[in-house]
Length: 162
Image (cartoon, rainbow, N blue to C red; front, side, top):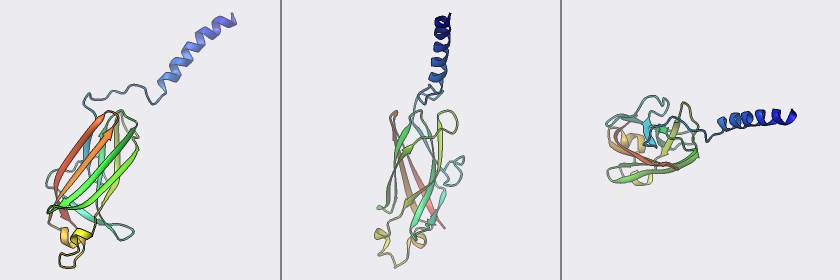
């Protein structure tokens, strides 16, 4: 009798353990990854073409374009590149890597990315710094994400704000 007990219990335990792994299938769209650029502090608010994006002063005195992302993908890890250009000048070129923490289903929301603005290309413009020079100026934010499932890209034309 003890042998039969092990046979019955062991498959039940295996099934329970299999349902708890990170590799359990998720109900995800077929065309993943999907990428949405969002407001930096509220990842439920998508950023749209023509929106005003504030130039943020960072804690160490640098200036940044802040944004968030929503990534729909069952993959466990991501790599992301973000660049900001204005008037043909590359002002930011940042790389991020990490783990996708699923907030709901196969959706991960991440806030607080800061694309660091290089002051070099702006230095010759009347001696002013980034916020003054970029207010009202056209900015292109290019965000690309790579996962084991594939690649996605969003390019937005924004307006610098203060």
